[in-house]
Each structure stands twice: as C-alpha cells, then as structure tokens.
Length: 524
Image (cartoon, rainbow, N blue to C red; front, side):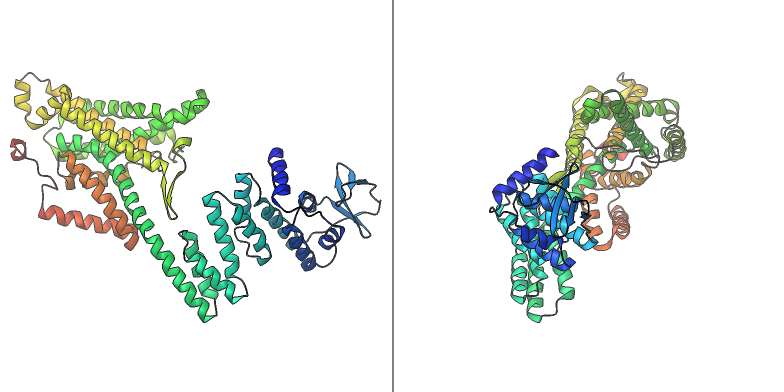
C-alpha cells in the first residue's frame, strides 16, 4: 500500500504541470465558508503538485491545525508548514480544523479525482469507482485530462461516461447537446440508463430530441449484444440440460427404467464435489485451484457406485414393470434426500469456483461470457463425445446395445446380461454425478438440487426420442435456447409453461420424438 501511494504521488508530480502549493491556496481551503473552501479546493486540485496532494490527504485525515492565520500539518507529534515543508513549533493554542460533512465528501472526491492520473491501474479503477456518481462540473477538466491519458479501454469507457454524465447535467444547453452526441456512439449499457434518467428531467425541447435520438442509436447498437447474450444463455442452459439428460438417456432411454432418483444421483455428485473441496481446503490449500480436476472422477464414481447398489438391490427385480420402477425410485429419491440432510444438514452448502473459472470474457459492451459457463459447455461436449465413444465403439457399449435391444439373443450369445445391466445403470448414474459436479459451479448445492432438473431431464429425453443420443442433444439445446428467448418476452414462469405446452403439442403430433427409433427394437 505504501509503495502504491509513493507511486501515485510520483506519477502525479510528473503527470501534472508543476504548480507549487501557495500560501493563499492553503488559506482558501482552510478558512471561510464551506462553499468558498470547496471552490478553493477544486481550483487547487486542477493544478495539484505532490505538496497539494499531501496537504489534502492531511486535511482529510484531520491532521491539520490552525493558530491565528497560520496553518500547520501535524505528523508524528511534529508540526510542518504545508507550503515549504519546514518543521515549525506548534503553538499551544493551535486548534483542529473542522471539516463539515460536505467538505469531507469533497476532500474524498478530490483525492479520488487526483488518483485518476496515477500510473497504477488499480488506483485509477478505485478512483473511477469512487467518483462514479459525482456530477460536479468543477471536476470536468481533471476528468478530461485523465480521459486523454487513459490507455485501458474499459477505464477509458468509464471516464467517457463520467464526462458525458457531467456534461448532461450542465446548465449550458450547448454542452448538453454535445454530451448527447457523444453518448449516441456509446456501446455501454450504462449509457442507456443515463440517457433515460436525463430524459425524465430535461426541459429543453432541442436537447430532448437529441437525447431521444442518442437513446435510439444506443439501443440499436446494444440489440446484437442482447440477442447474442440470449443465445449464449440458451446454449449454457442447454449444456446443463444435456449433462442431466445424458445419464437418463441410458437408464430410461435404453433400459426403460423410469428413474425418479436420477436427480438425487446428481445431488450425490454435487456433494462429492463439496467433500473434495473441503479436503483440498484442509490438506492441500496450495493446490485448491485444481480441486475440481479431482472432484470430477470422485463425483462420477460416487454416483456410479450408488447406482450399481440400487440396480443390484432394487431395480433388477422390477425390469419390465415401468410403473413399479417409478414408485420404487421415487421412494429411493426421498430416502437419499433424507440421508444427505442427516449427514450435511438441511441448508445449502457452498462450493467455490476455482480462480481460473472466475470472471469472464467481455465480448461486447453488454455481452460478457463467464468462464464457469464456458467451461461447463466444454465439459458437456467432452462428456457427450466420451459417452458416444463408449456406447458406439467399445465392447461394453456393444454389449449394452445388444442387451437393451434383444436380451434373449444377447444371453444366448453368452453375454452376462445381469452384469451388463449393472454396468449400464452405473454408467447412467455416474454421468448424473458428473452433471451434479458441473451444477455445483453455477448454483446452490442442497438436498433438493435434483428436484429442479428431473422434470426437464425427462422432457429432453422424451422430446429427443427415447434411446436417441442425437435427439437428446438437439432437444437439450433447443429447449435451452427457446426457454431463454421466451424468458426475455414473458418472464421465467410463463416461459416454462409455454415450453411445456409446446412439448405436449409436439408429442401429440410426433409421439416418437424428434428422432424415431428404427429397426426391430422400435417394434418391440
């Protein structure tokens, strides 16, 4: 912090035109009415040198005393002249300078405005944040100087906004018209808010027309960002639905088990991620940013093991009886929820994003792509490719397809169908665990985690076509994008209802879903 302040003062000394603090400026800032002191402060800040900054900082820290018309800066029980810096004896009758609230606010804003010229980007960022709502026209020259010198695009945009916001509040009509013209080229979403607020208070007809024209241009430039943002949100939601539905595509699509405990298998994957996070925090804090890499296989194995136990203990006795599997798995889901509540408590637990998944990419002024969403989209693609390879290219996948399509013939060919059933159900459950691991990075982890996705997962599988991997992908992405676009028009609840009505109508017209199953299995 000390180094940062030294850098700030050194930069300020170089960046500003040297103008030594004068005794008249000191007296103007200290003595008189508050308005007069504020005016003197702003005037001195425009041509501040390092002594001016130090004096303003001391005044803000209540380290300035007066005796008659003399001013002293007190530091380490010693008194110094603010102009020459020479040590002086502090008179016994010296009194503290009283700064009313308005003066204190102006001192803070003046210090922040001076930091705008710092070479330290973080100091400049903090200064812009402090001055965000300041519309004092007296600070305009300093902001224009900082705007001309700024090299970071994001900070330059914010300075432009501050400058235009100050000009919009000017009593000069020409300056307000100039500000409207400047803001019309902005692609910053905050510009829209500034223009709308000013339109509500503007009285001049010419300026109102200019503001409305600027607002129309800003809205047009933001339209593409809004559309691309809705598409990205839809793809992000679709990737989560895909992860949730992929496991169900095996247990329900291929095996015909209406697994109402699928959401709870996701929940187990999410809690496994939470446990791994805790272990890294306790035993490997230096490698905490990579805990997610260890959590992925742990979440898969935990859910797969639970799925294998369920298949061996309950599901295998109910094959061919879908309604009974529905009731049995629903009861299992309730037991799993209660088990988690007993172990971890009823409240949600916190799962943190690693540092490399925090933040995002700023593509447009109103379009930012969060890293955690991008990683989940990539993860969903990787899981999809891995599952496609496992089912389509491996011996295990061949046996799973053979058993699910014609169990007697597969058995006659020497395939251990009971073991394949366990493997297949464990695979679907493990993929549900992977979905839970991914969901832990974008939402809360709690005992009810799975309940929010189980219906959507069944809708995706049914809409895509039971047993069709490609259909699951199309249905997940289609529902995700459709849902996000409808949310923009109707709100979240009505969008959900509209999607449900659409699926019902679609299934009525095409019961087999988007992709119909072909061959003898479709006739069985």
